Structures are given as structure tokens and as C-alpha cells.
Length: 436
Image (cartoon, rainbow, N blue to C red; front, top):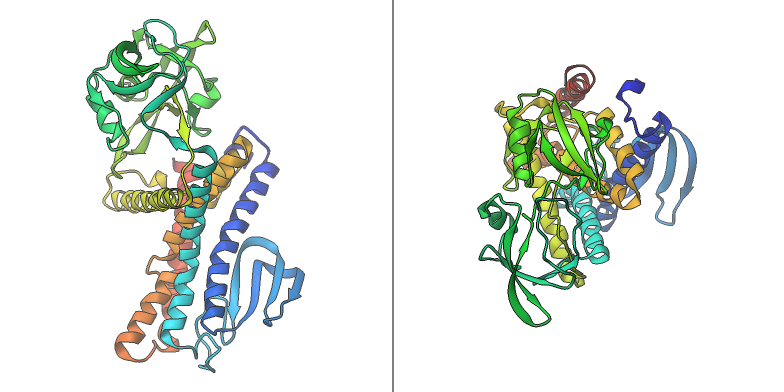
């Protein structure tokens, strides 16, 4: 098992990070069910984090027992009238029970769990936008990158970048479109404003071969590549744009590559064997290519501004929507066979990612929770019995027919749903441990 735990930390650290991540996401999800149920007049008997023997509990003034159980593998809210924690089955009771409440109240309570996950994610993204800021426009150079030849950097701190190769750089322009149109040259014409005077100077291609981050589970990390390294050549072929690296690595067919690295004024060589992976595009689609696990970005360190609350919330909501769109797109491409099912994450994969993000720092871990919360909210909306989406399908059936499905139908459907979920988990785990 240790072979599958990331190299950067112990099994204990990884499991601890996973338990914390799972507990936070489940607590958010179940609190959504609880609070909307309470507002709708449905009484919650138990709010539990974990399953099994209770190690701590207390009763609140609303008559709900809050508890922590010994097995931190999820949690649940048990409403009055539930035959089980899945809110299905049992005899219809009074207005304050899950089965006796009006359909709108039950549906709102069920939907509130995923909604709480989305809100949590948006809040996380919004807060981080307010703390760390977003790029201000005109884009202002905060610090000048240290780059080796053949890069030419005539930019200075405080320069306002108005255009690159005549293409405007502004808040209203999609920077990715500008980058796609730029020539792959080590020196480009930058139109800038310096001390109130507009001029043209030379600067690097914005996405240089500088390593901004490394994927912990990809080949570059164990090979010894570090953040801040600048790749100057691959197999003897000079490179100065990140897109060039992508093209060369993808054309390698998975063969070993020798990278010339410039690191703080010194040069060294590192051998890396790329692996095949499905990589998301900015438009939500995917492409399959060979990768090393080196992540680039805009090398220019730009000034940031700190958005107001409303702008931050808008940005947070947009990020949630982007994650949802990317997730649905990825699932569709897996279903039709355009990308590999190795992109499915099992609990082991999520545990590894939790440990990696926790090791990277608190900010990275909390950001990871934002992405994970959106994924959990989306998963729970799938129309599969035992998930919230399955309950909403049953509620839709009740709205149309005027009566809920029979207990026999519910039992069969929940058995099918549980079998489907468990089969998917086993499939993802088998992929992760033995096939991918």
C-alpha cells in the first residue's frame, strides 16, 4: 500500500489530511440538509459526523443530537420519520417528519445538501480572491523575471503593459486568445507606459519555459525538477515557449527526454519519461497527450488588485460553474471513449491529493477543499438512487403521479443504486492501483 501513497509524506499524514477533507465536505453537505430541513419544519433527530460507535454527543435546544462517531468515513442527518439515514422508507407521519412534510419542503431539504457544497466552494474562491487579489489592468509589472539567454527582458518594475505585438492587453480581452496569436519568439515587442510615457521595449514570450508548479504524481517530481527551473532545451532542441515544450513532449511518444535546466545561474540535465494523460482545455474539452507534470503560466509577475465583496462573489460563482462544466465534460468524454477512465479518482486518489495539498500549505489545502466540495455537490445531484439526485427523481415522480413510489420499488431502486456506486468505486480503485 505504501507504494501508492505519495512520496512526499507518510501514510499517516495522507490519511489525516483525507479525514479532515472528507469531514469538512460532509459537514458542509449535511448541514445544508439540516438547516433547510429545520427552516422547512422538518425535525432532525441526529446530525452525525462519522458512523459507528458514538464518541461524543450533545442535544441542542431544537431536540437534535449532534454527534461524532468512531468511523470518520462520512456522515448523515437523520430526520424524524426516516427509516434510515438515506431518508427513504418508513410510514408517513406528521408534518414535522421527512415523509409527512409537503413535497416542496422535502425537495428543498434534499437539494440543500449539494447547494451547500456549491456555496462553500464559491465562498472559498471568493475569499481567496479577496485575500490574494486578482490581476489589475492595465497589467503592471511587479517584478522582472530572471531568465537566461536567449530571452530578452527590457521590462522594468512598474511598467504598464498595454499591448504585446500590437495586441491589446486589457480586462475585456481573453488573454488566452492573445497568447495563441503571438509568435513563438524569445523576444517580442511590448507596448508599455513607463513614468507616463508610452514606448515599445523587448520582452519574453509571456508563457516561458519557467516551471511554476509540479504535479506531485507525475514524472517530473521524482526526477528532481523544481519550481523556478527554466527549461532551455529538450533532447538538445532549444525551447523558449511553454507551447514548444508541450509539442516536443507530446511528439516523444512516451520516450525518455533529456531536459537542459537553468537553475539560479547554473545548468544541469534531468532525464524524464513522459506519461500519457487527458488534459483539460480552457473551453472545457479535453485532449490526450504525453506530459511530464510540469506546469507553466504567465511568467510576468503582475500587480494585483483586491476586489470588493460582490466582484469576489461573482468570481467565486464563476469558478464553481467552470469546475462543474469541466467535470461534466470530462465524464461525457469518458463515456464516449474520447479520454481514459484513468481520470476517475478513487478514495485512494482523493486521499493522495488531500495529502499533497496539505503538504503544500494551508492555502493550497483550502483551495483543494473548494474544488472537492463542488465535485461532491455535483456527484450527489446525479439521478442515482441513494444519492440526492435519485431522491429528487422520486419527488418528481410523486409530483406527476400524486403519490410516491411504493416501498418495494424504493428498495429495489436503492439496491440498484448502491450496487452501481460500489461498482464504480471498485472500478476506479482497480484502475488507480493496478491499471493506470
